[in-house]
Image 1: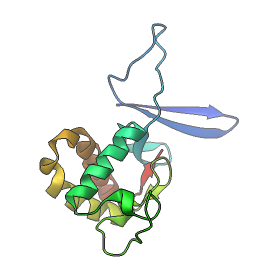
Image 2 (image 1 turned 90 degrees about the horizontal axis):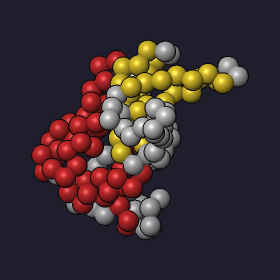
Image 3 (image 1 turned 90 degrees about the vertical axis):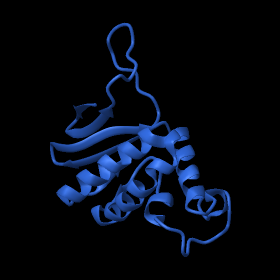
Length: 148
């Protein structure tokens, strides 16, 4: 993973790029639409890594929700009308896929379930790994996970 900060007119923009991300012939990194997770305080980066493309993140959440015995497409905020009541990890599943934060307290809950379920969905090993590392950093530093 590499991390860069760009400043434009006093605005600090954080960019998270995973190692091995394709780069152009001229050496400039190509940016791919997707979800990056970060645990940052000021200029100090405790974690920053690409989770996946938006489609890959949707596939990951859909598969994990099915493992936890519910279908995201049935839920409010997705394609359905079913209200969120007893579904586990609403803080993760009913969260924007491109912005916002998850508190370190919610990251604690996500971490427990992710560690329990990662081996049950081997096709999503990388996604679970990134999520677990982000949650570990958030909990260790008592900082939120930023979705960007």
